[in-house]
Length: 387
Image (tube, rainbow, N blue to C red; front, side):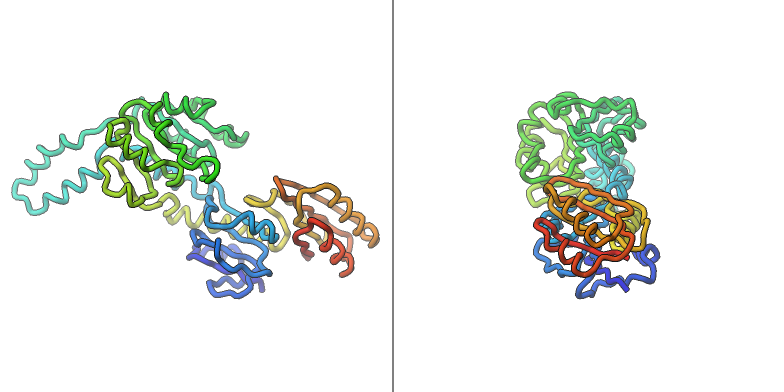
């Protein structure tokens, strides 16, 4: 039985996905796989026997992915599994940015037991007037799984949508409505948009505080910014200054911080993007399937630190080699296999950045010596024999 450690509460549906071959528990000493959501693993002592970590969600800031790559631990995420849930939250944020609904709700709470309630409500509602999003221009920064859904939904709501994504993939482009106008620079987004929403991963040395005084200065007066991606993508001090000056009419985020809470025209709520029953189940199922496919077959899908590499099983014995992306590794491995008189029935070799994966289906088992020889090659990180 294969041990799987859960570091957060994961939807019980994973038991159905993984089946009886797996022991799933929050109290496992040397797990082959780890599943988690928000648990911070940077100081977590991981076992040498751990082969993979699967996050039931898209962001992996809580996992030391590069450190794990060096240890031969494949890290998976679940892009797109919670995209619809986040999209719906972002649409809610757009409406909250347009109408003073939160302020109005808080005000109504002060009217409890008032004898002239109806008159007070009718008189006071003018203090919470807002605007409609129909016909307004929305700038979407990041057109991945979530950004594309938001853009398409905004088109359906009658907005004029502009998107920016310098890394726009073919698959993402195909998902976009033809009505979405893709621009080439962030400045264009700032200058065009009545509303801006952010949907990019946070990378500290690349995009920290990209929503800052310079970006905001290029925006229309009274614009709205929605940030349901990562709090660090916006410079809170610059945002608050823009709110106070009237340059921004509202900032809506699900990353509350002490400096934002209580500020007028700043709407903060918890990070609720994936907090739906459907999203939690979708993420759990996707993470469990990817983890099981890797443990049982060596196939890698949606890894953030190793390349995608998968192929159907053609023999009973498969060797999986995680290694650095350097010259001559493949030739050395196939040479050792050939010297054993073992035929290579199928082979896949894939690389991404500093790391690579070689997957070989063999006609028969390798000797222990051959496996040790492959493991001892320079730049080989981990070798697995999968049967």
